[in-house]
Structures are given as structure tokens and as C-alpha cells.
Length: 172
Image (cartoon, rainbow, N blue to C red):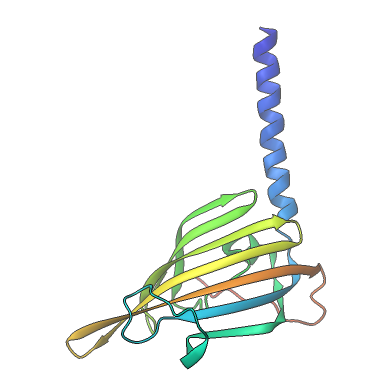
């Protein structure tokens, strides 16, 4: 009976630690975000990206961009958001103490599917990746093009210092 009580107590402690770890790694506030976007070059198969930056194959901000995230955004989207959330939905979201993954589906102006992943390496650092395949009708054909956005983020302050937070449009 004593062993059973010890196991139950240890299980409760590990569960509480997991919840505490998640709360500590998902800080709302001001983050410096550096990102690179790799676009598929015309003529390549979907998902085949150029390894060079020539010809507009990649866009990046080499200087960090100050970005304000609310607790709602951090908890539900991670640190890297699609360029437009207006017509996008996340599904199959899996939240763990040090990660968030989800499927991304967009309709409307941009139709496509992809995935979102954020990993917190510690309380002040995160890495995130969005893979996305756009499908557009051109006459009788459907054209597909893929892009990947990778970002690193460093937490700066719980005060956004005048930087407006990214808003999430209401669900339709």
C-alpha cells in the first residue's frame, strides 16, 4: 500500500512540474524575432527549395523585429504566425511543455495547407517553423507552390514598450 501511495504522489508531482514548465516557457511580452522565408523556385517540385538566396528564393530580416505577443497568442500559436491569420485556422494542435505543433489550413485569398511548430529551448529562446503549400487555380490548372519560414525569437521584456500586439481575428 505504501508503494502505491508513493507512486501516486510522484505522478502528481511530475504532472504539476509539467504544467509549471509550460507556464515558465511561454512568456507573453516583447520578443525579438529574426526570420527567413524560403520560396519554391518556379519549375521545382513542391517542397524543393533553392539552397541559394539568388533570384528571390529567400526573404529574411537579418535584424530582429520587435514583436509583441499576448499570452493568448503564445499559448495558441507559438512565436511564429502566418503572414495573414484572417483566413487561416490551426487544427490538430498539440501543446507540450516545450513545444507546440499544429496543422495550418488557409482558405480565401490564399488556399493551402501546412504545419506550424514552435520549440522553446529555454524560457527566453524559441525556434519556430511554418511549412506551407499554396494551391491556386489558373484556368483549368491548379498550381502549387511551397514556402517555409524559419524564425528564432529572444524574449526581451514582459512590457511591450509601445509595440502593438499582433491581434487574432475572430473565428468565423
